[in-house]
Each structure stands twice: as C-alpha cells, then as structure tokens.
Image 1: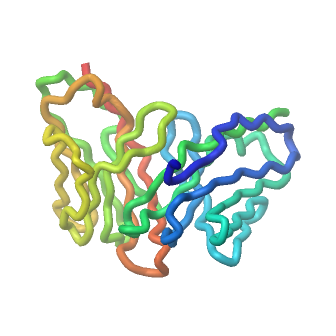
Image 2: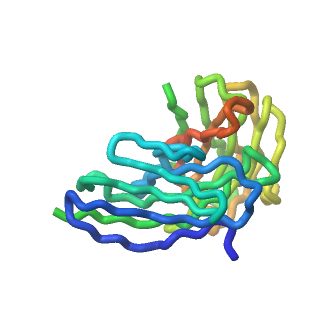
Length: 111
Length: 115
C-alpha cells in the first residue's frame, strides 16, 4: 500500500460545481496533514493545513478522519481558476520535517 | 511574508559544468529543504537542513552538494550532472518547532536542463 494515495482524476466539473477529493494515508502515527495546490509548471503552494477538528477557508473545507486514516478536501462553487493539481501531503511518522507527497488529483473546471 | 525565493529560474548546463542553485527566505524558518520534481510526479525530498546542519540526506548522489551558509540561505552545488537530473528543483522552508504542523513554504523552483 502506498504511504499516501489519491485518486489521480482528472476531475472535470462545470463552474459552480462542488467537488471533493479524498486521500488515504498508511501510517497511523502521522500527525500533520496538508493540501497543496500545483499549477502546471509552477511550484506547489500550501492551500491549507488539515486539523483534527476540520477547517474551512472560504470555499475550501478540509476534513481529517484519523480512525479511517482519510483526509478530504471539498471545494464549493468551483471557479475556472481552481483548475490545478491538488496534492495531499502527510508528515512521515518518524520525522515531522519529512513530508510524504501524494501523486496529486487533477481538477479541470470548465465554463 | 511567506516567500521563498530561488535563483536562477532556468538553468541549462553541460555534463562537465559546475553550477549552483540558490534559495533564500526571511521568515525566520530554521528548517530548509531541497526537492527534485519530475513532470507529473510529486516532489521528491533530497536534503533537509535544521539549524543550518544537514539532518536528512535521502541517499542523493554526491554530484549534488548542499550548503547552508546561514539561517536564510540554502545552496545546491551541481557538478558532473547527468541528463536524467533534468528536473524542477524546489526549495522549501518551515519552522523547526511550533504547533507541530510544520507547514512548508515552497519556492518557485529552478528548472534545470542538463545537456
């Protein structure tokens, strides 16, 4: 089993749609969880950290389910500018500063 | 300011050249990272510096030599690279301590082509 697994997509959705990405991680001792966004030929940018209680930032909501070792990202009212690859990232249980990156989920928001 | 800067943006080098990549941050972060990213793949960790000391080397070939001259700067010295080393090289930084989340802020990268 891969340490961090994501559905690669691509997800093609119309503007205004709600889209959800899921991610599973293998090591129950992991403590830190993040979603990054990467545009084509650009660097990954931190979108949000994922907290145990769940957190929301505008149209974006992240949830963590430790029992199922599952992280999700919900995007409401999708915009064209949301088109990107979304990377699920989890810290290595043995070293907080070592991150394990998922392969990413590709999103295309269409007019 | 959550900015990590990297120079150069693009670099083309021959297999016998010696070049250096530079990274700078002024967020007071004491952990800095080098990643290599190939197309359609996630970033792959190369090195981690913590308090200016090398703390992780992910078995990177010696043709890549990192250096951390001070808490704001990180260099990656390149020598005798191979064409397969062509990639986007990303620098990142994070706090060493804090709320435990250690968010890493990633620089824009240097796109390296080895000919």
